[in-house]
Amino acid sequence: MLRVFQPIRIAAALLVLATVLAGACGEVFAGVGMLAQAPAPVTNLVSGRSFTVEIGIVVVMFGGALFAVCRSSSRT
Image 1 (cartoon, rainbow, N blue to C red):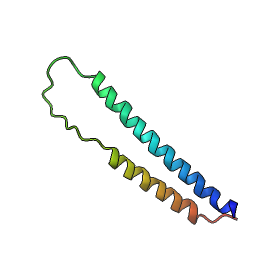
Image 2: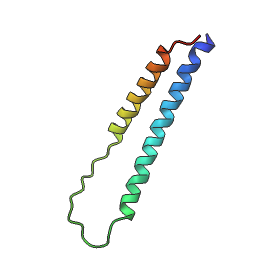
Image 3: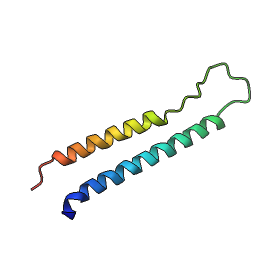
Image 4: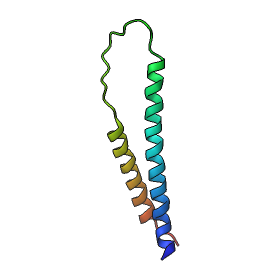
């Protein structure tokens, strides 16, 4: 019984890791944009929209696809 849940635990751990890394990368890239700004007035419009939810959805979808592929693979 323990052997059955091991791939699920691994997939869940990878999914959590990917979510944390995606959030961390979003924070890092947000800080880089502020450092690269010129002191002169900028004419382009920048929305204050955060893509955290969208990144989370993509990570969950990739995790689900990885889980489905690993679950359906035929192991002997």
